[in-house]
Every structure is written in C-alpha cells, then in structure tokens.
Image (cartoon, rainbow, N blue to C red):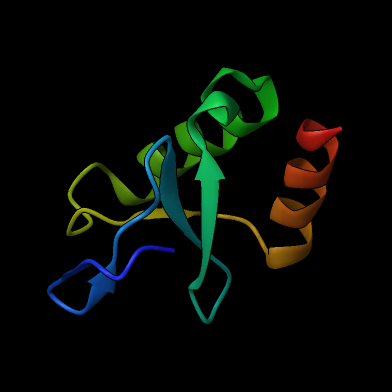
Length: 77
C-alpha cells in the first residue's frame, strides 16, 4: 500500500486497482492482470448491472468475501 491518500482512501499500488466486497465492503487490492480473467469479468459485469457505473469511483463487487478470495487464489496460481 502507498501512503498517498485521496479523500480518506488509500490508493492502490501501480499496476493494481481496488474493489470492495461483502456487507462490510472489505477492500481488496487486485492486480490489473485479473481484468483478463473470465470469472472476474463476470463479477465486474454483475457489478455494472447491479450498481451502475456511478458508485463514487469505488468498484463494489456483488459477491461475498469467500467468493472473491477463491477467485483471487485461483487466478494467482
């Protein structure tokens, strides 16, 4: 994580982006390479359908934390 802050939010390191997941909106820092992952793309499409693109610059994925953890683990291996 970097020390840069923008309106109270930490910025993702270069080459990464941030998504929020779950009821408590837990923050996950995700490598840009995950944008090519078909499962991750489906989650982004669901987010666009459910929340639209106007969510104050935050990407909120409509899944629980265990789902995103499985996606991240599978994509990392």
